Amino acid sequence: MRLMTSLAAAVLLIAGAVTPATAAAAELTQISRTPYKLAEGGSFARYAPRVAALDGKLRRASFADVLADGNRKARPLCRPTGISGASGFCWQNDGDTTDKQWYPQGITGSWDSSASGSYGGHKAMLVSWHSDNAPKPKGVRISFVNYDDPAKVSYRHVLLVEPTSDDTFGPVKVHAGGIAWVGDFLYVADTKRGFRVFDLRHLWRTEADPGKSKIGKGADGKYYAYDYRYVLPQVGSYGQSGNGSCSVSPPVTAPLCFSFVGLDRSTTTPSLIAGEYYYDGKGGSRLTRWNLNADNKLAEETAAGAYRSSHPKIQGALAYKDTFMLSSSRTSTTAGVLYRSKVGAASSTSHLPAGPEDLSYQASAKRLWALTEHPGNRQVIGIPITLG
Image (cartoon, rainbow, N blue to C red; front, side):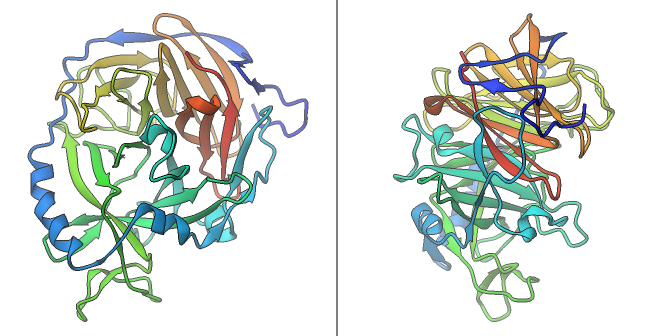
Protein backbone atom coordinates (compact mmCIF):
# COMPACT_ATOMS: atom_id res chain seq x y z
CA MET A 1 0.00 0.00 0.00
CA ARG A 2 1.47 3.38 -1.02
CA LEU A 3 1.97 5.85 1.81
CA MET A 4 -0.94 8.25 2.19
CA THR A 5 -0.10 11.90 2.77
CA SER A 6 -3.46 13.40 3.66
CA LEU A 7 -5.40 13.51 6.89
CA ALA A 8 -7.28 10.52 5.56
CA ALA A 9 -4.18 8.36 5.85
CA ALA A 10 -5.26 4.85 6.59
CA VAL A 11 -3.32 4.10 9.77
CA LEU A 12 -2.94 6.33 12.70
CA LEU A 13 -1.35 5.63 16.03
CA ILE A 14 -2.99 7.34 18.95
CA ALA A 15 -1.72 7.91 22.46
CA GLY A 16 -2.24 4.88 24.60
CA ALA A 17 -2.81 2.31 21.88
CA VAL A 18 -2.20 1.19 18.35
CA THR A 19 -5.26 1.57 16.15
CA PRO A 20 -5.23 -1.62 14.09
CA ALA A 21 -5.42 -1.20 10.34
CA THR A 22 -5.77 -4.92 9.90
CA ALA A 23 -5.72 -7.97 12.12
CA ALA A 24 -2.94 -10.38 11.23
CA ALA A 25 -3.38 -14.07 11.87
CA ALA A 26 0.37 -14.57 12.18
CA GLU A 27 1.71 -15.28 15.65
CA LEU A 28 4.92 -14.79 17.53
CA THR A 29 5.87 -18.20 18.89
CA GLN A 30 8.35 -19.19 21.55
CA ILE A 31 11.12 -21.60 20.51
CA SER A 32 14.00 -23.24 22.34
CA ARG A 33 16.70 -20.81 23.45
CA THR A 34 19.40 -23.43 23.94
CA PRO A 35 20.93 -23.37 20.40
CA TYR A 36 21.78 -19.68 20.66
CA LYS A 37 25.00 -18.73 22.41
CA LEU A 38 27.32 -15.73 22.41
CA ALA A 39 30.78 -15.52 23.98
CA GLU A 40 33.04 -12.51 24.48
CA GLY A 41 36.16 -14.65 24.10
CA GLY A 42 38.41 -12.39 26.16
CA SER A 43 37.69 -9.39 23.93
CA PHE A 44 37.26 -6.90 26.77
CA ALA A 45 40.64 -7.88 28.23
CA ARG A 46 42.20 -7.69 24.77
CA TYR A 47 40.95 -4.19 23.98
CA ALA A 48 41.44 -2.69 27.46
CA PRO A 49 45.21 -2.01 27.23
CA ARG A 50 44.85 -0.68 23.69
CA VAL A 51 42.14 1.76 24.73
CA ALA A 52 44.09 2.80 27.82
CA ALA A 53 47.19 3.51 25.75
CA LEU A 54 45.27 5.51 23.16
CA ASP A 55 43.54 7.45 25.95
CA GLY A 56 46.98 8.87 26.67
CA LYS A 57 47.83 9.66 23.03
CA LEU A 58 44.67 11.40 21.81
CA ARG A 59 42.77 14.34 23.21
CA ARG A 60 39.88 13.11 25.35
CA ALA A 61 36.34 14.43 25.09
CA SER A 62 33.32 13.86 27.28
CA PHE A 63 29.86 12.98 26.04
CA ALA A 64 28.74 16.48 27.02
CA ASP A 65 31.64 17.96 25.01
CA VAL A 66 30.47 16.22 21.85
CA LEU A 67 26.83 17.26 22.35
CA ALA A 68 27.90 20.87 22.93
CA ASP A 69 29.97 20.74 19.73
CA GLY A 70 27.05 19.79 17.53
CA ASN A 71 27.77 21.26 14.09
CA ARG A 72 24.41 20.53 12.41
CA LYS A 73 20.90 21.69 13.18
CA ALA A 74 17.96 19.38 12.68
CA ARG A 75 14.72 20.54 11.02
CA PRO A 76 11.15 19.82 12.10
CA LEU A 77 9.46 16.81 10.51
CA CYS A 78 9.58 17.60 6.81
CA ARG A 79 7.27 15.01 5.23
CA PRO A 80 3.78 13.74 6.12
CA THR A 81 3.98 10.66 8.34
CA GLY A 82 0.31 9.59 8.45
CA ILE A 83 0.72 9.23 12.22
CA SER A 84 -1.43 11.19 14.65
CA GLY A 85 0.59 13.13 17.22
CA ALA A 86 3.95 12.33 15.60
CA SER A 87 6.98 14.30 16.73
CA GLY A 88 10.61 14.17 15.71
CA PHE A 89 12.89 15.78 13.18
CA CYS A 90 14.56 15.69 9.78
CA TRP A 91 18.30 15.87 9.22
CA GLN A 92 19.85 19.25 8.48
CA ASN A 93 21.02 19.18 4.90
CA ASP A 94 21.06 17.38 1.58
CA GLY A 95 24.28 15.65 2.59
CA ASP A 96 22.39 13.75 5.28
CA THR A 97 18.95 13.65 3.64
CA THR A 98 19.92 12.41 0.17
CA ASP A 99 23.45 11.02 0.57
CA LYS A 100 23.82 7.56 -0.99
CA GLN A 101 27.17 6.93 0.69
CA TRP A 102 25.68 6.79 4.19
CA TYR A 103 22.36 5.19 5.26
CA PRO A 104 20.73 5.62 8.70
CA GLN A 105 19.92 2.32 10.41
CA GLY A 106 19.82 2.09 14.21
CA ILE A 107 18.31 4.31 16.89
CA THR A 108 18.53 4.41 20.68
CA GLY A 109 18.13 7.09 23.33
CA SER A 110 19.24 8.16 26.78
CA TRP A 111 15.94 6.63 27.99
CA ASP A 112 17.50 3.28 27.06
CA SER A 113 20.75 4.16 28.78
CA SER A 114 19.32 4.80 32.23
CA ALA A 115 16.14 4.56 34.26
CA SER A 116 16.27 8.35 34.71
CA GLY A 117 16.05 8.86 30.96
CA SER A 118 19.18 10.99 30.76
CA TYR A 119 22.93 10.47 30.38
CA GLY A 120 25.45 12.90 31.80
CA GLY A 121 22.60 15.29 32.55
CA HIS A 122 21.35 15.32 28.95
CA LYS A 123 18.54 13.85 26.91
CA ALA A 124 20.04 12.51 23.72
CA MET A 125 19.64 10.09 20.87
CA LEU A 126 22.22 8.02 19.03
CA VAL A 127 21.65 7.02 15.39
CA SER A 128 23.88 4.65 13.39
CA TRP A 129 24.72 5.06 9.70
CA HIS A 130 26.52 2.48 7.53
CA SER A 131 28.62 2.94 4.42
CA ASP A 132 29.35 -0.70 3.60
CA ASN A 133 27.68 -0.39 0.16
CA ALA A 134 29.57 2.78 -0.75
CA PRO A 135 32.39 2.79 -3.37
CA LYS A 136 34.84 3.74 -0.59
CA PRO A 137 33.27 2.42 2.61
CA LYS A 138 34.30 4.13 5.82
CA GLY A 139 32.57 1.88 8.31
CA VAL A 140 30.00 3.20 10.76
CA ARG A 141 29.23 6.64 12.12
CA ILE A 142 26.97 7.56 15.02
CA SER A 143 24.95 10.75 15.15
CA PHE A 144 25.11 12.24 18.66
CA VAL A 145 21.77 14.07 18.83
CA ASN A 146 21.18 16.70 21.53
CA TYR A 147 17.49 16.38 22.41
CA ASP A 148 17.44 18.54 25.53
CA ASP A 149 15.13 20.94 23.67
CA PRO A 150 12.99 19.20 21.01
CA ALA A 151 12.53 22.60 19.32
CA LYS A 152 16.31 23.10 18.97
CA VAL A 153 17.83 19.78 18.02
CA SER A 154 21.51 19.69 17.05
CA TYR A 155 23.81 16.80 16.23
CA ARG A 156 27.28 15.72 15.17
CA HIS A 157 28.50 12.56 13.46
CA VAL A 158 31.12 10.48 15.33
CA LEU A 159 33.05 7.65 13.68
CA LEU A 160 33.25 4.21 15.29
CA VAL A 161 36.77 2.80 15.39
CA GLU A 162 38.43 -0.44 16.39
CA PRO A 163 41.76 -0.16 18.26
CA THR A 164 44.05 -2.50 16.33
CA SER A 165 47.06 -1.93 18.61
CA ASP A 166 48.04 0.37 21.46
CA ASP A 167 49.13 2.96 18.86
CA THR A 168 46.41 3.15 16.18
CA PHE A 169 42.89 2.23 15.13
CA GLY A 170 40.86 1.37 12.03
CA PRO A 171 37.25 1.59 10.81
CA VAL A 172 34.51 -0.72 12.08
CA LYS A 173 33.29 -2.68 9.06
CA VAL A 174 29.76 -3.78 10.00
CA HIS A 175 26.28 -2.88 8.76
CA ALA A 176 25.16 -1.50 12.16
CA GLY A 177 21.53 -2.36 11.45
CA GLY A 178 20.58 -1.70 15.06
CA ILE A 179 22.02 -0.20 18.24
CA ALA A 180 21.17 -0.26 21.95
CA TRP A 181 22.56 2.11 24.58
CA VAL A 182 22.84 0.69 28.11
CA GLY A 183 24.71 2.60 30.79
CA ASP A 184 28.05 3.63 29.28
CA PHE A 185 27.94 0.93 26.61
CA LEU A 186 26.67 1.14 23.05
CA TYR A 187 25.81 -2.28 21.59
CA VAL A 188 26.03 -2.41 17.79
CA ALA A 189 24.62 -5.30 15.77
CA ASP A 190 27.33 -7.23 13.91
CA THR A 191 25.27 -9.03 11.27
CA LYS A 192 27.04 -12.37 10.97
CA ARG A 193 28.51 -12.61 14.45
CA GLY A 194 26.65 -10.88 17.30
CA PHE A 195 27.45 -7.53 18.94
CA ARG A 196 30.27 -5.02 18.99
CA VAL A 197 30.49 -2.98 22.22
CA PHE A 198 31.65 0.66 22.51
CA ASP A 199 32.23 2.73 25.65
CA LEU A 200 31.00 6.34 25.81
CA ARG A 201 33.53 7.09 28.56
CA HIS A 202 36.21 6.98 25.86
CA LEU A 203 35.73 9.61 23.16
CA TRP A 204 38.76 10.91 21.27
CA ARG A 205 39.30 14.11 19.33
CA THR A 206 40.97 13.72 15.92
CA GLU A 207 42.52 16.04 13.37
CA ALA A 208 40.99 17.74 10.35
CA ASP A 209 41.44 15.81 7.10
CA PRO A 210 40.03 17.78 4.14
CA GLY A 211 40.79 14.88 1.79
CA LYS A 212 38.69 12.57 3.99
CA SER A 213 41.13 9.72 3.31
CA LYS A 214 43.15 9.17 6.50
CA ILE A 215 42.29 6.79 9.32
CA GLY A 216 44.31 6.09 12.47
CA LYS A 217 47.82 7.34 13.17
CA GLY A 218 49.32 9.30 10.30
CA ALA A 219 52.93 9.61 9.22
CA ASP A 220 53.05 12.89 11.14
CA GLY A 221 52.16 11.12 14.39
CA LYS A 222 48.70 12.73 14.50
CA TYR A 223 45.41 10.84 14.49
CA TYR A 224 42.77 11.06 11.76
CA ALA A 225 39.29 9.69 11.07
CA TYR A 226 38.23 10.60 7.51
CA ASP A 227 37.73 14.18 8.75
CA TYR A 228 35.33 13.15 11.52
CA ARG A 229 36.51 15.13 14.51
CA TYR A 230 35.52 12.60 17.18
CA VAL A 231 35.81 8.82 17.34
CA LEU A 232 34.28 6.24 19.68
CA PRO A 233 36.38 3.08 20.24
CA GLN A 234 35.32 -0.54 20.48
CA VAL A 235 35.99 -2.10 23.88
CA GLY A 236 34.60 -5.62 23.42
CA SER A 237 32.47 -7.97 21.36
CA TYR A 238 30.20 -11.00 21.59
CA GLY A 239 30.17 -13.63 18.87
CA GLN A 240 28.55 -16.93 17.98
CA SER A 241 30.53 -19.94 16.85
CA GLY A 242 29.41 -19.77 13.20
CA ASN A 243 28.46 -17.03 10.77
CA GLY A 244 24.81 -16.23 10.27
CA SER A 245 23.32 -15.64 6.81
CA CYS A 246 20.53 -13.21 5.98
CA SER A 247 19.87 -14.61 2.48
CA VAL A 248 17.03 -17.03 3.19
CA SER A 249 15.00 -18.11 6.20
CA PRO A 250 17.17 -20.83 7.80
CA PRO A 251 16.54 -23.95 9.86
CA VAL A 252 15.70 -23.00 13.42
CA THR A 253 19.08 -24.21 14.76
CA ALA A 254 21.25 -22.37 12.19
CA PRO A 255 23.53 -19.51 13.33
CA LEU A 256 21.65 -16.27 13.87
CA CYS A 257 21.61 -13.20 11.65
CA PHE A 258 21.99 -10.11 13.87
CA SER A 259 20.20 -7.57 11.71
CA PHE A 260 19.09 -5.26 14.52
CA VAL A 261 18.99 -4.88 18.28
CA GLY A 262 16.59 -3.15 20.67
CA LEU A 263 16.24 -2.90 24.43
CA ASP A 264 13.74 -4.06 27.04
CA ARG A 265 14.06 -1.93 30.17
CA SER A 266 10.99 -3.52 31.81
CA THR A 267 12.93 -6.64 32.85
CA THR A 268 14.69 -6.97 36.23
CA THR A 269 17.91 -5.89 34.56
CA PRO A 270 17.78 -4.52 31.00
CA SER A 271 17.81 -7.11 28.22
CA LEU A 272 18.69 -6.91 24.54
CA ILE A 273 16.26 -8.03 21.83
CA ALA A 274 18.07 -9.06 18.64
CA GLY A 275 16.43 -10.17 15.42
CA GLU A 276 16.77 -11.09 11.77
CA TYR A 277 15.95 -9.59 8.37
CA TYR A 278 15.84 -12.01 5.42
CA TYR A 279 16.30 -10.92 1.82
CA ASP A 280 13.99 -13.65 0.49
CA GLY A 281 11.03 -11.62 1.77
CA LYS A 282 9.59 -14.55 3.71
CA GLY A 283 8.77 -14.82 7.39
CA GLY A 284 10.48 -17.03 9.92
CA SER A 285 12.68 -14.38 11.48
CA ARG A 286 14.02 -15.33 14.90
CA LEU A 287 14.16 -12.97 17.86
CA THR A 288 16.46 -13.63 20.80
CA ARG A 289 16.64 -12.07 24.25
CA TRP A 290 19.97 -11.52 26.01
CA ASN A 291 19.89 -10.62 29.70
CA LEU A 292 22.43 -8.10 30.98
CA ASN A 293 24.06 -8.09 34.40
CA ALA A 294 24.62 -5.17 36.77
CA ASP A 295 27.70 -4.17 34.73
CA ASN A 296 25.59 -4.01 31.55
CA LYS A 297 27.40 -6.98 30.03
CA LEU A 298 25.76 -10.23 28.92
CA ALA A 299 24.73 -12.17 32.01
CA GLU A 300 25.25 -15.58 30.40
CA GLU A 301 26.33 -17.09 27.10
CA THR A 302 22.97 -18.73 26.30
CA ALA A 303 20.07 -16.57 25.14
CA ALA A 304 17.47 -15.91 27.85
CA GLY A 305 14.63 -16.42 25.37
CA ALA A 306 13.98 -17.15 21.70
CA TYR A 307 10.99 -16.57 19.44
CA ARG A 308 9.97 -16.92 15.82
CA SER A 309 7.85 -14.47 13.83
CA SER A 310 6.15 -15.20 10.54
CA HIS A 311 6.17 -11.51 9.55
CA PRO A 312 8.42 -10.74 6.54
CA LYS A 313 11.30 -8.27 6.24
CA ILE A 314 11.62 -7.29 9.88
CA GLN A 315 13.91 -4.26 10.28
CA GLY A 316 13.68 -3.53 13.99
CA ALA A 317 12.24 -4.92 17.21
CA LEU A 318 11.99 -4.28 20.93
CA ALA A 319 10.00 -5.60 23.86
CA TYR A 320 8.34 -4.02 26.86
CA LYS A 321 6.69 -6.23 29.47
CA ASP A 322 4.79 -8.84 27.39
CA THR A 323 4.53 -6.77 24.20
CA PHE A 324 6.86 -6.91 21.19
CA MET A 325 6.98 -4.16 18.57
CA LEU A 326 8.40 -5.00 15.13
CA SER A 327 8.94 -2.78 12.10
CA SER A 328 8.82 -4.18 8.57
CA SER A 329 9.79 -2.57 5.28
CA ARG A 330 8.42 -3.05 1.79
CA THR A 331 9.82 -0.79 -0.95
CA SER A 332 11.29 2.71 -1.00
CA THR A 333 7.91 4.13 -2.02
CA THR A 334 5.53 1.84 -0.12
CA ALA A 335 4.44 2.29 3.49
CA GLY A 336 6.15 0.13 6.08
CA VAL A 337 4.34 -1.84 8.77
CA LEU A 338 4.44 -1.69 12.56
CA TYR A 339 3.43 -4.96 14.25
CA ARG A 340 2.31 -5.17 17.86
CA SER A 341 2.68 -8.78 19.00
CA LYS A 342 2.45 -11.04 22.02
CA VAL A 343 3.59 -14.64 22.17
CA GLY A 344 0.82 -16.94 20.99
CA ALA A 345 -1.58 -14.14 20.03
CA ALA A 346 -2.59 -12.49 16.79
CA SER A 347 -0.70 -9.30 15.93
CA SER A 348 -2.22 -5.92 15.20
CA THR A 349 -0.69 -3.75 12.48
CA SER A 350 -0.33 -0.08 11.67
CA HIS A 351 1.46 1.76 8.91
CA LEU A 352 4.84 3.48 9.08
CA PRO A 353 6.42 5.73 6.45
CA ALA A 354 8.41 3.92 3.76
CA GLY A 355 11.78 2.50 4.77
CA PRO A 356 11.40 2.00 8.54
CA GLU A 357 14.40 0.65 10.43
CA ASP A 358 15.31 0.22 14.12
CA LEU A 359 13.05 1.01 17.11
CA SER A 360 13.46 2.46 20.63
CA TYR A 361 10.83 2.94 23.34
CA GLN A 362 10.76 6.00 25.62
CA ALA A 363 8.48 4.67 28.36
CA SER A 364 8.39 7.90 30.40
CA ALA A 365 7.02 9.82 27.41
CA LYS A 366 4.96 6.87 26.08
CA ARG A 367 6.65 7.32 22.73
CA LEU A 368 8.06 4.79 20.26
CA TRP A 369 10.95 6.11 18.18
CA ALA A 370 11.57 4.95 14.62
CA LEU A 371 13.59 6.20 11.67
CA THR A 372 13.49 5.86 7.89
CA GLU A 373 16.47 5.19 5.63
CA HIS A 374 15.77 6.00 1.97
CA PRO A 375 17.46 9.03 0.35
CA GLY A 376 15.04 11.95 0.17
CA ASN A 377 12.77 10.40 2.80
CA ARG A 378 14.76 10.28 6.03
CA GLN A 379 13.11 11.23 9.30
CA VAL A 380 13.33 10.39 12.99
CA ILE A 381 9.77 9.89 14.21
CA GLY A 382 8.32 9.74 17.72
CA ILE A 383 5.01 7.85 17.83
CA PRO A 384 2.60 8.19 20.78
CA ILE A 385 1.96 4.71 22.17
CA THR A 386 1.61 2.92 25.50
CA LEU A 387 3.17 -0.52 25.93
CA GLY A 388 2.70 -3.05 28.69
